[in-house]
Length: 243
Image (cartoon, rainbow, N blue to C red; front, side):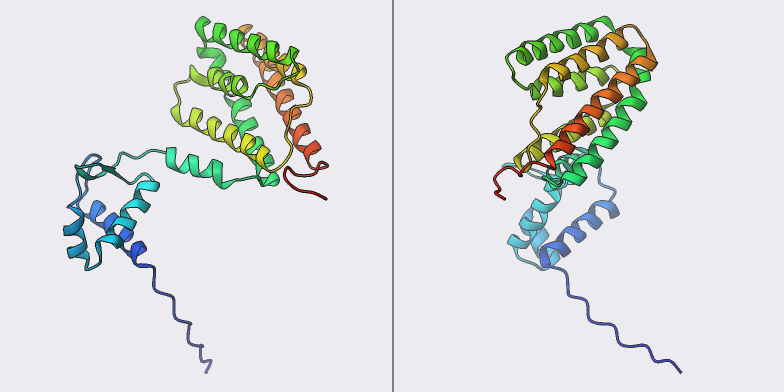
């Protein structure tokens, strides 16, 4: 008969982690809606049989992931669900890992190329005008040999704003943040801002003409340029490091 070995003991979870689990269970068991108050901190500590510090740590952890919110002088409340804490943590969690940045750009490229057809169906003259104005600012900075991250950020938000898809806009924001956060670790400077401005202007031309094939092609070329910048950065010494 085969005798199975004894499984090693599992380390008990940290106390504040157990508090988090209990608070989550309390919210679920009582089907508390967003805005519902939790019992006072002291009462929670008594019910859980732990210190107020442990309760406080557990609440802070649940605040960081968007489950709870504290209102100074009032109490702790269940928070409405939002993707924002998850997306923000994703942007900063990626750090400067170049391979992950490449993967993020692939996802962003696929999203924008895949959803540009809906923009062509919905975009109005005001959005086109704002896109043109943003491109003009890009051109002005490019003529001075400057990069234009803020204008780039606004351009892609404007391009998809007409779809009224908040999750899409937040994802695009996260991808933008991840790319530019990586510049803290590796050299992602745009060596050809004039070409980048022209890429964006060509995208607006295609969108205004409602030319889907051209819009997809221009977006694809734009992201091909970003991938070249990333590829070039692999041959350059990372920022803050020496060979």
